[in-house]
Structures are given as structure tokens and as C-alpha cells.
Length: 236
Ligand SMILES: [Fe+2]
Ligand SMILES: [Fe+2]
Image (cartoon, rainbow, N blue to C red):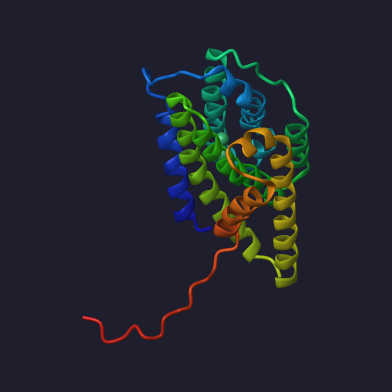
């Protein structure tokens, strides 16, 4: 990734740090009891995941990442205030969250990015499903807000990952790609299992959920290189 590209990303995150995401007040905020029961445990796990402490990554990339982490903490607090207003109990830990934190701590920047982008790509699919599953206007807007931020995060992270990978020999690239994709598919399956009540309710069985997640993965991390057109001549 070139210094100019990095500067563009830094600008983006600084801009957002100065204007933290808000959910407009006054949105209809009714959460029916059966809906609350359906989403409570699931949303609490994702809220916990947003609360990334990010110490390892902070040391790795300073200011850049500080802004990035602040945005994630904003996600956690937006979700938390929604949950508090609806009496949905917060979680202080969940085994999937612990596993992710442990993995991220293990890692250098590249592995850290692999784990992080895995969580965010799957998170994006999840928040879209959650938005479609709820009648609450506020929760819908909240989910769309998170997805809007995360789309930029995954764009940044995938560009960084592909740049790190491109610097490796072909065999290492192939190995990392297939390992990451397998890890991604495994994680998506675990997310389906642990959130299946909500996901099934929204019409997703394990197969369709996995397909949706892998489509996101392939879009960002297995980009198809376009053939270079040879017929661009005689323009103007
Ligand atoms: Fe987030
Ligand atoms: Fe993120």
C-alpha cells in the first residue's frame, strides 16, 4: 500500500473520529417482547465483540489504529445504549469472543488483520440480517450505521492484507489464502451455530448463511483481476 493510499485512509478515519456516528433521536424505538427474546443473547455477543481492546494493534500502528479502535468502541456503545434502553443484559464474556481475542493477541499484523477482517465480514452479514429481522426503526438504523462503517474497515483491511500478501513468494501466498478461507468458513459456521435461532428465524439455514459470508470474503479477498483490454485504441 503506497503512502498516498495510507494518507487517504488516515483522512477517512480522522474525519470520522471528529464526527462520531449517532443514531438520530426520535426514531420509533419499539421492540416487541418476542423480538427482544429472539435477539437478546445474539446482539449481546456481537456487542461484546465490538469492544475490541486493541492493545496489540495499537502498538503496531499508532495513531491510525487509535482512530480505528475508537470507531469500534463507538459501535459497542451504540449497541450498548440500545440494549440498556430495552433491558437486554450485556455479556461480560462469550467463548467465541474469548477465542477471537486470544487469536488476535497471538499474532503479528498480518494474522491480526486476517482474524479482524473475518469477524467484520461476518459481522456485516449478521447486522444486515438483524436489520431485516427487527421491526425497531432505531435498531434498523443502528445496524445500517454499523455496516456503513464496517464496509470501510474491510475495504481498508483487505487492501492492506492483499498488499502484505503480494510481497510474499507464490507458495506462501497460496498457503495463506487457503488457510484464511478455511478459517473464515469455519468461523462463519460457528457463528451460524451460536446465532442459529435468530438466523433461522430470518430465513437463513447454515448453507445460505455460509454462502452469503463466503461471497463477502471472495469479493474482498479473492478479487478477480480484470483482463487487460487490448482493444483500447483509436479513442477521441
Ligand atoms: Fe465495529
Ligand atoms: Fe470494524
